[in-house]
Image: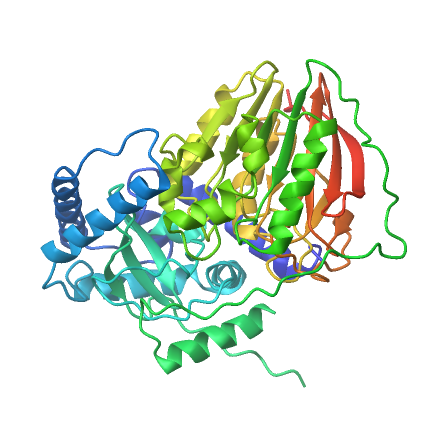
Length: 206
Length: 307
């Protein structure tokens, strides 16, 4: 089956793209974006980094108020610690709303960037990866990501294209929405609705 | 199948189920299967079981607290009676569904109690169903890391445990460096998403393959152990590297394996796990079903990096 042309093209495309992307370790958004003629405005990038950096600082500050998790922590301790930080985050961001981290300009940029990422055979493969488990939910800012819903697999091409995040945060998809999640607290911090373009309509066969 | 799941996902999205609502799920208990016509013969393990060798077990996609998981776990413990493996590797989805403290007990500590009581260490990799906090769970030996490597106790073998649901550039740089600087004869990669799989549900992860396979080839990885698809499959060597899918530690997707040119041996009629033994330049292996049948066996020579 892997001799089939679309798969070969997908692999080849991914290799070419990923080689280019991973050769650029620091300024990753430039990689695919530059190839696609997209350029993230410096002020937009600085603004986004400032916002996620401020959130990371908040997370660290809140975490510092909790007892340090021992190296041989029990599941009870891990769970208690995780829910405690979640509660603190929710309280500290009681007024948080969609667009606080992904400001409108950033949302526009992310949609344009992901439109490029999810183009063509490599994009179709990336889309398949993201949607390989159902996500029967909608993101809500400052709510817990439900334990029972698996995390989306993040295609390497997507991660290589988006701006780097502090260790406290990560990107995931919920259906076509790109969420920004606190890794430790399991809290959804913000999201870009319909960040992934709708799948192209299947070509009808004659 | 993926199309159907997408339709389900979109349908549920349109119904607007709010985040935080638990989706419904159900797991029907599966009875212990009867021997199938044409099933491989059962018998003693086809392994050298030599003193001083590295012996280990592998399974994944197990933490669902189903009778299938418990019965497979019992078979794994029983197998250790004749094949004293010294460590266990998990290919991810260590806990499916809820991950409250009681789930660590019901989905891990109770079914594998005989192994844990015997002091057999587990080394976990994370799957897409696994919360990141599992890295802090002592019995998974991840030491707080999402991805890590460790050396076998006394042999020239190193295992590289990846987090394949989030292969960001930092992790790629890490694995590149780890593989490059590793001096061990045997380099074995463990990750959740298979680079090669013939299963209908998920299949091969082409995006990961595009990034990782060149590194595996360059640095002489011999074996890749994955899960994600709930079946057992040994893939024919791909450019000298043998890939296994060992994702049937819990609920199995019966009949999910498609007939492709990739498959060396596949088994999707019941649960299975892998046991392996490395002696010098050869890795011997058996795949064993829940009922204790050997469903695959063979040996793999060490794959060397190009000079």
